[in-house]
Length: 462
Ligand SMILES: *Cc1c(COP(=O)(O)O)cnc(C)c1O
Image (cartoon, rainbow, N blue to C red; front, side, top):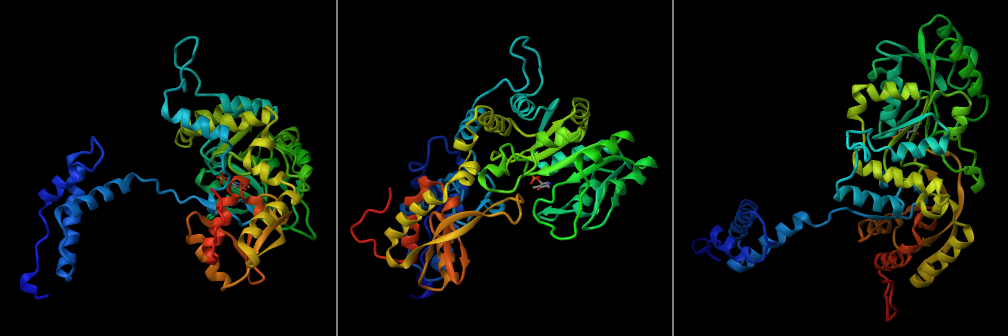
């Protein structure tokens, strides 16, 4: 084609006219004009590169599709077949249905967030979640923040500007994402006082700073994402609390995961509970809403009423407070514990409680659909999310043979839905413990698509 005869694209006005009837009622002229212009610009470039000319109707169509695409759901939901239940990169805990429903209702409607039903006056901010926490842990009061890092920062802030915060050297951890306890203390305006050694710290190590009046707060941090073995020692919580209190210092216990059900019931090591740490003398205990609690991202603080009242008055507490949607969803999640339905209805606990036999049956059913390229294998799942390091749950999964494991893993991840697995012994392993049984058919279909197996006449899932 000669360049002299290069056609012009249709005008922006023509494209606008063609698109107008195709877009949702109420679409603003400015938004439509914006896409029409960019479609015409792209068309001009395409023609310059020797492309075939297209009609104004075709371009109007394209403009309307682009506009609709802007509001199409973009969330890349995934099937977590990693065997890591609380997977940080996959959004930690999937919410229980009750929390999702509470969040939807709170999002779309007005609610009595800070209005007292009886007096009609401004009241305390929606307290449902906090009331559940008090009932569940026996604490005097409770407070919900955006996340546990915020909860720790607010609690440490009680030491005051320049106030000393003592931490055992074995607990000066990095939580993940580069967040480190010493930095949180520094940013809270307090002064870190390190005591003890990496592997061994005793209550006596805390004594000098307390006796000399240099410390106002003792911070204990659950070493949630690593485990020390061998020649180790940590102070007994009660002994340390007694010592701190005798010198007028506050004890804050950052539990990280904060289990509200006994982990040992599921064959896991005992994970300290907020109740037991309060009983051992902690003045405040902080934990996450989206780790073992199994609900939305939040920080949960329980403990002495007078200290929680001081935190509420901290201007930073305002900057770290959750919105109505989170408050409603946290409240609905905690309500399941009080109603005795946590194991049955909170996905994280359902996954922890699933029996290996049930997982093996599901793995067999999926493998049967994928033919001889899939094999049922025994696996080890973990709780993840920086909980119970080194602890595993016996599980079952599907091992996939065939092409390069790396390529297959990538194909599964890029598929729709995205399936996230792991490689072990040169094979892709998809662990069933972290897959909701309702997604098994979808998982089988995704595997079939990825291994490129012929589906034949058999229907594969809904
Ligand atoms: C995960 C964790 C935190 C941070 O909690 P977020 O809810 O992620 O902010 C703090 N401390 C410990 C010990 C943790 O395990």
